[in-house]
Length: 367
Image (cartoon, rainbow, N blue to C red):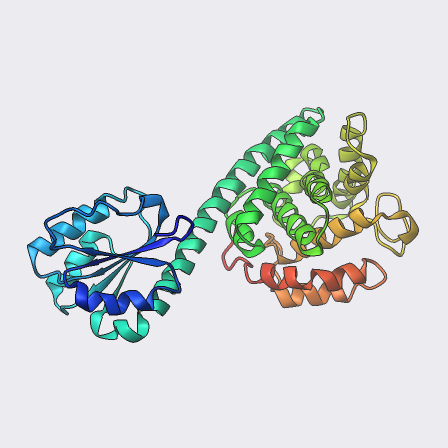
């Protein structure tokens, strides 16, 4: 067997029959045929970590075959690859045996000739999605721990260290290297705290956007750090305003609109680059000068700020809030398109693939 080719283990009680099936699997991996009824244990089996999938082509009505299947499957350990069981008997007992052996999917042996490869490909896709979901869940949970620390420091009036922010950004980028924006958002929607959810959502959108634009790795990290920090100032806003189950009145809105300058003041004496500080202070500015806190116009709003603003606004539109339902992806993107003159429309156009992917993850239940 080639050292760089993943194996597909084909466990059979009739090698002459299974050789025809093996030829159908060659496009997916290197078939390794094992005769379950051969009393001599094979000495050239591939290492468990090199096996991409297991296919059984054996009767499940006989204890000898079932015991041999169990022995070979057990050798692969708890992280066993996907297992497809071909069913030669359509009986309750055979179905129970397949389930007991841990089959991820079953397929009637009569359909194997025309459906085996396609069914196995589907298992590979499902397994990759499951792995991506697990990795994203772990990454989001770890990033939320970092974010909690960032906001706790902010509440105490202390600037977070640059190292802590780098750690959080690395977790977000690493998760998005393993999955897509939709998977990230599906996980982030599970967080209860609205500020945490929003910061992680915007950081994920920004990281995905940076990758989509082909930005340099250093710029991807800087942008993701800025997105993670953009609402740091909300850590100093009263919870009665942050968590109000309704729209803010004018006085409350005035308090809420202090969060960009609060975040900027917390960070400005640290070792943060100026463009990152500008993102924190200016992500609510508008190109026509109607934004806040400084009423900046387009010539004073850097590209990185414009990029985070697009992600921030899209995130706010697709989020569920106590006083509004989330917009669907298409509707949220159309809203951004209608803001020509306030946000960078060229960036909005470039953002469309992210909007389409992210919009599919809009929550259907209250967060």
